[in-house]
Length: 295
Image 1 (tube, rainbow, N blue to C red):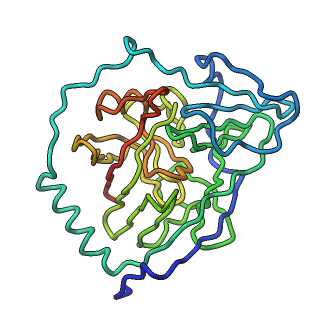
Image 2: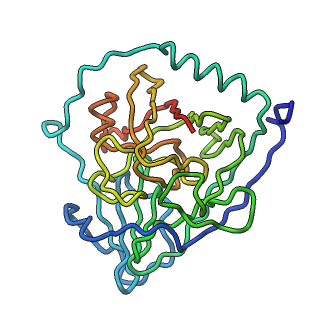
């Protein structure tokens, strides 16, 4: 193990792109999304780098872009925040953090570049997160597009796996600290026993859709960053909202690009469990958080 901390060494990882990946049926999942519209009669040449938070885009048989805006709830329709007790780190959390801090002092640090979006194709679907960035792309055949390289530091993209991270098809990254996103605000630390995320926790319109493990996503499911973190389905992930000290557990059900976040959760879960409103007018629906789970 390296006995130094290389924050001064900036290692830029190449971006690669795979289009043949995990089979995920994608049938009639947009039936509840209304106000769909075609922005242009001409075939789309690029996937938009940003959209309104929660937007879902589909491309028709002529590769024309159809926008499905997220239906923000009116105040009276919002899920009420549960009576949650704010808590400081307990004995278990303190032990985990101490273990990670002890190991991370000797870990290499990698600075990643923003992933390059693939060209749009007929039948493709693109999900945007609570900050308006594309976080998940599904091809026409129902396969999840790995546009944010699953192969760390190489030029060969890997296919996604329906099993756990150690399965063939995805090579887990080496232990280290991986820094990425706007202003390098996000960091995933991988140690011998744990994976910890520090940065933005946001949301996407995933509930009721099909996740990366071929199962319907529930309100308490979340999506981890496909490039670095693919725990088994239903892995418990502890999430701390660092802005109000609310701590909750969510369960891995999906993976995505997460270009500027460490975790994506469901919008109702964000409001109910973390007291963070998903509000279009105020532009809210994210928080600075810390997440961790066992490897």
